[in-house]
Length: 173
Image (tube, rainbow, N blue to C red):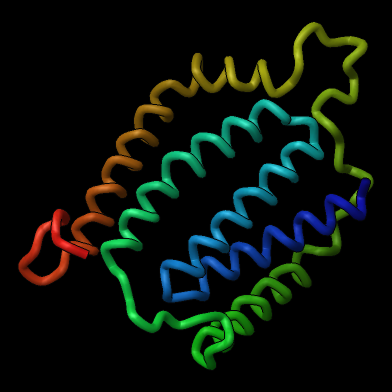
């Protein structure tokens, strides 16, 4: 199980580097899908099956629709791919940066401290991730509203950035 979680965490880092290093929205969307799917796998491996389902449905169902819409408006005839020199340089810089940060913080990191949420399920009446969702809606309601406003602001910023010179968002592609 430790090897699977380590593999998922490495795939998550590679997916995040793919999102950060690629200037073309098409390939960055693929990296975003990989990062979100692998992040859901990490949550499932720690016992948060409901939370990973909510993340997968809401994040990929909502934000990637907006991302696909903005990518369709900013269509490039020849997008840069991961094999280009500039993108490959960014990938190497990000991976070296992740390696340096890992070298600094690796000393106190032990795989034996990874626990599943429901490790003491004999003493619990509810699953850990379900009570976390209840806590998110009761104590974190204000933060949930702020996150909704930030997502709405992100939608307007993306639509404004992909608008073009003098054309609106309803232009012929």
